[in-house]
Length: 218
Length: 235
Image 1 (cartoon, rainbow over the protein chains, first blue to last red):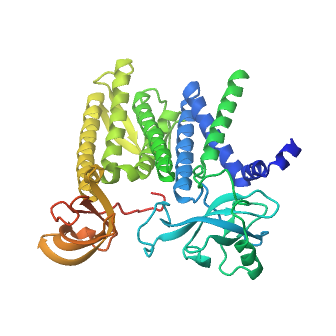
Image 2 (image 1 turned 120 degrees about the vertical axis):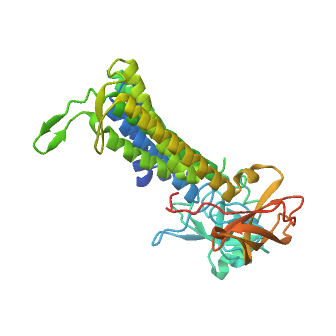
Image 3 (image 1 turned 135 degrees about the vertical axis):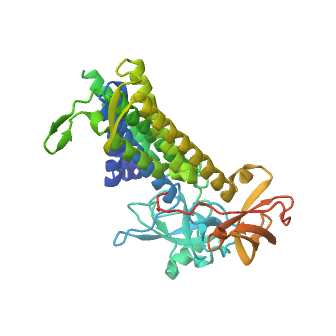
């Protein structure tokens, strides 16, 4: 199991991202809430149904707020302060102006709440290239007119990517030499799942498991 | 499904669950009212049954439902949740009568935080139905105000588009309404400045222009929509 996971870095990242503490905690809370609701509906006392309804409603509300507010779905997060970072060249596919909150296209790039969305394929050393969307309020590195960029990413959590203002000269040269063939990935433009969706699905699965165990155990 | 639709769907599901809870708790508060055994001592009355604190729990659930549903119901929220609670309580009385727990002329009291007096079941039902009717009236009036202000029905029609807009100038026309010039860019990027009449509440707030895609500069087809002001960050 260990060898097959390390041979597939995407799977390792998925597992590592899943085992983050807040994701585990959220999954536990959502699972317990759904289990209480199911038990209360099936054969529980009324107070359990009321507790289940309240906690499930609050959990759904939090997940909805996270989904609307958060940036997920293929959009890169910022770097951790004090965390490891490395430079990498990247191929620029497109640059668009989007609204900061909704991610929809805007016509007026000077509008107050619009940011630039750079659709990049990052080619890091020692890993497979991956496609990501990085947002920034300014046109850093002049990427509106260039096809190559230098990004800074977190080698241990590669969904954290930023486009720095002034990358070192040798990396700029390396990016200019980047061959579009080596940046070929099978991924399309980032769409991705809304943030928090995996917590919801896993919580429901946990709840179904809990209720099943309770009923089987009598 | 976009992020916003997914988030709103979850919020809608939370509203459905809370509405179920409001109905359940209010129904229980009247259905079990004769089954509650009160133990009174010198300081007051207490009970350890769930139905005893159902009215307080009902009020709390109703308030929570109001906060969560405000995103969808806007100004109709208060009337709608009050009507829902009153209908739930009335349904509980009807079920109690049909299950022979009480009769229509049984005199009973109903603790609504403080004892609200002893009345017959028919009297309680009349009170609840009038509260429900008042709630429905307030809800319908609030819905009409919100629909008009946000131009929601117009935005749903296919030939109308929405754009962010700015208001300029103010010339009072009648009472709180005045004429302004709404400035917006349509989907082709063409700038339009159209005179419209708006309520005073539209000034100093971010507004949207709702215009006919084929005739964006026509003052008769263009409206100003005032999106709901967010009280709390989460709503």
